[in-house]
Structure formats: structure tokens, C-alpha cells
Length: 358
Image 1 (tube, rainbow, N blue to C red):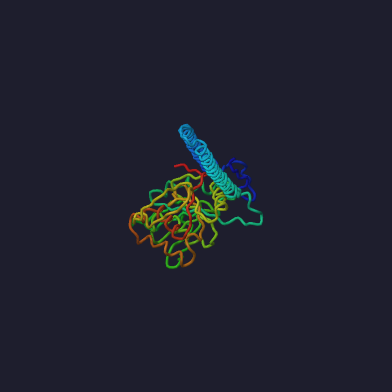
Image 2 (image 1 turned 120 degrees about the horizontal axis):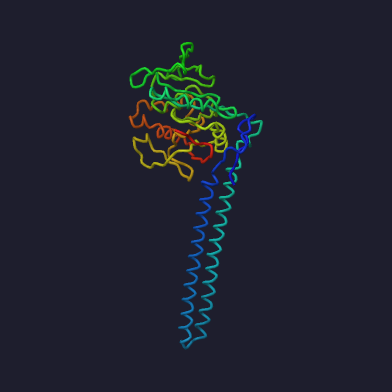
């Protein structure tokens, strides 16, 4: 059955509102495929056995016409016994292999899905979790519904929602609207290992934080900007787009899956690529049914701060400003490449609540 989570935070119960669809989307199709393959294998064995039986019958009929009937029949009986024993061994091996495969699969399924967000003990502190996205002059005036959905999450919600804005976009200054930054709010200018930026809290909501980058790092700024201010290795960063309305359960579901798969980047959108090309900013390959080459930020991606390196090891990520235009604009490929380079698997999940609206 589906795995249901019952706890979104220490104080807020979410009941059975969200369902981990791993069983419906992954387990059942795999078991069905296994059953089909096993059935076909058994059918092939039975057909082969039937053909051999008919061949033996014809051989016996011919043997009756020979002078040395007794010797031949004795030899045939011995041969038939050997063939029967051989078939039994092959059939037993096939059956044992199928049973072992199903057992291992079910055990791995139970072990991987048994960890729900409600299984966190009270002694385990809730990790810091933030949401981050970037915007441009074309989207900054229309992103208020996105912000509202992110600051009004169920439970405790995100600890912070970062809006990363370049100071200039295509050589023109970016105008920040009054609702996001009024004349009374002052941003603090700072730097991180040579990357200069300004940061401050928006008057719109105390969780809404602004990061204004002096250098435009393209769409990848949605993560790079937050890497400058979040230094806790285990902090969870969920990044997405400025033109999506994310569900109110997104924060709780991100906590659930990052606890379930602590070493993976979690997403609901993604795909596979095999070509090593400048378009993809390097090769990103992974093995496994749920693992993909790249994850799509539009659906929301949950990562940990340490996945991109700490301190000085973070800085290679900012080299995107000097890369090709295709790489500069392909944030999904570039960020996935960074994860791949650091040995982080990209995993897709299926969830009834983790969805998006344009």
C-alpha cells in the first residue's frame, strides 16, 4: 500500500494528505514485469518439455523396429532419466532465482520506504530548509503568487525564501518593485571569496530574503546566490522557478524525501542524456531506474548545501559566468553537472502533493 506521512513538523499534523506513490508508480510495474517474464520463462520450459516428450515417443517407436530392442530401450530409459533430472534442475534454478529476486526486491522496497518523515525522533533536530529562486525584469513583477505559496507553507514551512536578483540584466539595471523592496529597507553589501552581493529582508514577509548579485550568473543564480549566504553543510536548499505556484506541502515533502534519501538530490522532473557536449556543460551519467542525468528546476529540486562543496570548494560552481552561452542558460544541465561531478545522485520521486501549477 501507499506510504502515508502523518507529521509535517513538531507541532502540525498533516494527516493522510500526501501519499508517496513509489508503490503505484515503481514497485507494482516492476513486480508486474517480473511476473510476466517469469510466466514466459515457465511457458518456454513447458513447450520445450512437450517437444522433447514427443521426440522421445517417436524414438521409442523407431526403437521397437530394431533387433536389439531390449538394449535400446534400456539406453533410452537411462537417457530419459538424465534429461528429466536435468530439466528439473534447470526449472528449480529458475524458480529459486525468481523467488530470490522477488524477496530481495521486496526487502529493499520495505527498507527504503519504511522511513517516513514521522519516523524522525524528537531528539533529531529539524534541519534548516530554505527555498531559492532567481528572477529577471520580465518575471519580477509577476512572481508574487509564487512568493505567497512559498511563505505560506503548511507546518513550520521554509526557514527562509531567497529571491536572487542580478544587479544588472543584459547591461540594464534591474528595478525591484516596491512591494519587494521599499525605500526604507537597506541592503547590506558583503562578499564571499571575491563574489560581491547585497542581502537583506524584504518588507513583504519576514521569511523573504533578497540577494542582489553584482555579477549575473544566469539562471543558475537560483542556487549560486544562496550558496553565498547558507554555510550549514546539512542545510536543505529547495530551488525552483519564479513562474510556478508550488504546493503548500512542498516543504514537508522535501523534508520527507531528503530524510528518506539523505545522499541524493530529489526532484519530480528530470531526464537522461548520454552525449558529452558543451551544451550539457560536461557529462552527467547515473545508473538506476530512479536516477537521472539531470533534474528540472521547474518542479523543485531539494539538495543539501554540502552537495556543492564547502568554503573554497564552492567557487568552481561560479565559473559558469565564463562558459558558453548554451551552458550559461542551461541551468538544469549545469547544476546537475555540478552534482554529478561531486558524486551526488539525482533521484526522481512520485508524490501526490509534490506537483506544480504554471
